[in-house]
Length: 177
Image (tube, rainbow, N blue to C red; front, top):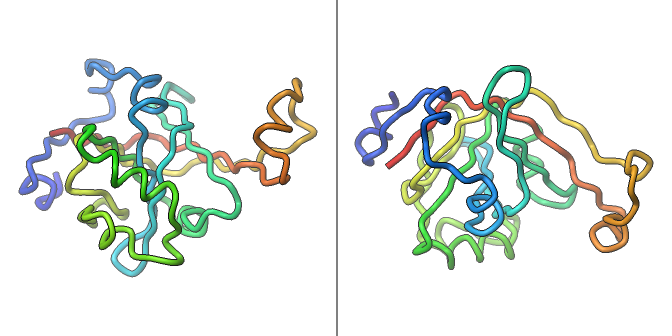
């Protein structure tokens, strides 16, 4: 276990422990939101997301996140092999709201929100998180208009043509408080 994570009150679990946890992905992802973060001490960025998937692929626990091409976080996740997914208690909702509506190109999100970055496992996580998934990026695919079998999402979500890129990460570690 990362010494820093232990000092911050996290307990490390293997990805297999996800089977035993009380984890409702529909609530955690859509209602509670999360931060997807990539990068390390030399440079990182985070963004709030409420779209994602948690489940099993290739026989392993995985998390899938999607990022639009204009998001600053995309630059970091594209050049790293590891990213983190951080879930928080409701008390951090204001910080998550800020991270979802402001770009790290224009401001220091940690400074503006009070979120404290922690550098561990080749990525960045946050001290205030109550659950962290460390994911190894194993698959990247740009969504394309021609691949939609039902075009109903295109106009309301992609009228600007800025289709998401999908990132599949195999969950390597889980930290919980």
